[in-house]
Length: 506
Image: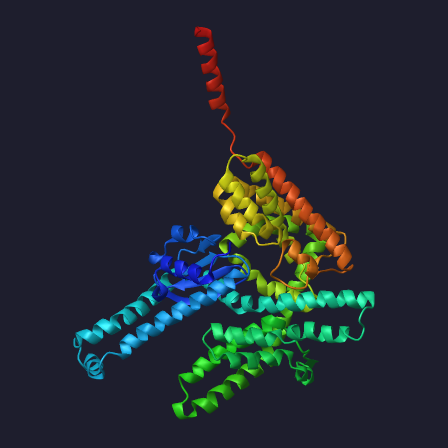
C-alpha cells in the first residue's frame, strides 16, 4: 500500500529538525534534496526507518538526500515545500506582529526592546548559523556538484520525453508508417534540444543568484541562427557552437556582470542600465570568446569518449561499470549530466550511459544471489522482492540501501557484475558497434526505448541486452561465491580437533 505523500513529508520534516531547519527543497528522479541550517538536528537513523524511505545520503554538512523512488518523490517534495513555506510565513507574521515602536527602539538602542529582540533573534541566529555551517561544510567540490545538479536535474523529464519521442519517430520513419505525422513528431521531439541552451542559462542564473531571464537571454545567443554572420578571426561562428557548456559559461558570466552592476549603478537607473549592460557585455564575450572555447571543450569531450571506446572499450567499460554504484551511493553521478548532455547534442546519443547502466545489472544479480543464499532471512527476502522490480527498471537505490550496502560484501560483488557488463558493451564498441542513449535518467530495462547507435537501434538493443545479462550473471555468481564471509579455517580446525579429543576420551 502506497504511503500518503503528506504523511511522509511531515515525518521527514520532523526528523530533519522541523520545517524551520530547512533552507532549500529540490528533487531529482528518485531523491528529495534538502539543505538544512543545523545538520546536528537531523535524525539520520530515524529517516532511514520511515516507511517509504529507501535510503538516506548525507555529505557530513548541510545536504540531506532522502531516497524515495520515482513518481512519489515529486509528490512528497511538493508537500515538503508547502510545509516549509507555511512555517517561513508564520515566522514572518510573528515578526510583523511586533509593535513598530518596539522595533524602532531595538534599531535605535544598543540593548533595547526585549520583546523585539526575542522575535528577531531566531531569524538572526538562524541566518548566522546557516552561513557558518555553509562555510564550514560546503567544500568547493561538493558545492560545484550540487549546483551542477540544480542546473541540469530539472531538465531530465524533458530530455526523457523528447528522447522517447525521437526514438518512436525513428521507428516510424524506418517502417514508412504515418509519413504525414512523422515531421510533426520530429519537430516536437527536437524543439527542446534545439533550445536547451536557453533553459540551461535560465537555471544557471537562478542557481547562482542572478536574474534567471537574463541568464536565458545571454545563453540564447549560443543557439541564435544569426550568429552564423559573426566572424571571429576570420572564421564564421556556427549556431549552437559550444552547446550547453557555452550556455553555462555565458549565464555564469551574466550573473557576475549583473551583480557588479547592481552594486555600482544608481537605483534610479538600475532598471535600465543593469539589464542592458549585462546582456551586452556577456553577449559580446560569449560571441567572441566563450562560444569558441566551449566548442573546443565540447568537441574534445566527444572525441575523447569515442576514442576511449574505440581503443580501450572493454577496459573503459569495466572501470565505468564497476565504479558507478559508489558514485550513485554518494550522489556524485549528477556531475556526469553535462557530459551526457553534450554528447547527446553532438551525436544524438550518449555512449557513456549504457556502460554506466550496467552497474544496476550487477546490483540485480547480487540481490538475487542474496535471496537464494539467505533462505531463512524472511525480512531481507521481502525487501528484495519489493525492490527488485525497481532495480530491473534501473532504480538502484532500494537495493543499494536496503540489501547490498548493509551486508557489505554484496555491494563489492555487485560492482564486479557492473564491471563485467560494462566490459561486454565496451568490447562491442571496440568492434565498431556503438550503443548510446538518446536521453538520460532511465537505465535498466527502461532504457531500451531510448537506445540508439551507429548501426541502428536493433544492434544497440542486442548489445545492451547482452550486457545486462552478463551483469546479472556475474553479479549473481560473484555474490553467491564470495559475497558472504566464510568460517575461518583455523576455527573449523580447532572445532574438529576438539571433537576428536572428546571422541577419544569417550
